[in-house]
Amino acid sequence: MPVHTPPDRCFALLPCAGSGSRAGTAQPKQYQPVAGQPMVRHTLAAFARVPRIAQVLVVVAPGDRTLQVPDAAYSTAECGGATRAESVFNGLNHLLATGAALQNWVLVHDAARCLVTPAQIDALIDACLPDTVGGLLALPLPDTLKHARGGRVDSTIDRADKWLAQTPQMFRIGALRDALAPHAASGFAGITDESSAMEAAGHQPMLVRGSAQNFKVTYPEDFALAEAILKSRDA
Image (cartoon, rainbow, N blue to C red; front, side, top):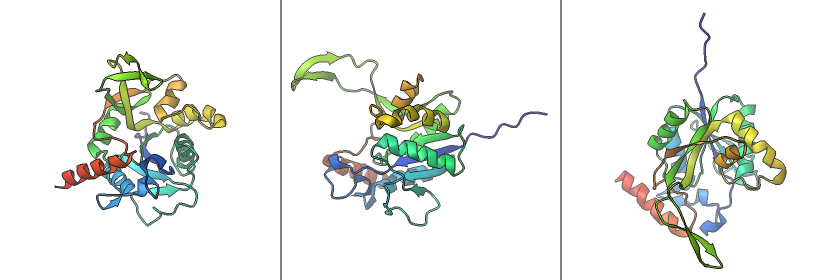
């Protein structure tokens, strides 16, 4: 009798507990209106259009009820931490405590990358499902890269093998939690994204080409650009 192998399940996890201090907004930047609605709503809408995502979990700060409205497209967990990595780690544990399995996949995505498209999410899933490690959306570095010293150029760095990391970043839930766990005692120092945790654990994540439009809204001028792109898509 053939052994039944359950299909791979994919979850999405959006850390959404940051204050967004660099954005210069009066509220956390993920809730700042962009093209008529809070920025994170555009992010959630993209994931809602990917049928292979079994559940979207938004990790918010304790006491944050902004997104707690009846919506079958996502759920929230008030387990956000002091850093993005801590929020992701807590979110993974929440997924496991509420029905996800260690071998399931998780796509971790920045709430402030509100221009991600369902096609980009699907492309990452297609690339990672057959892989033993997983990977991330990224772009080859397009610009000349400089090393600075004292506010002046010290040297030019070869960009031939340099990539700009984006999100989503897709790994097995158990593997990513195990990769993050050793860094909890240090407050996840040095862990800038999920790939960096996997790299520190000895893995080599796959680079899947993303899009220049999938940028992270970080500074005040980014909001106008994101709004223009979203409006152009609706035109």
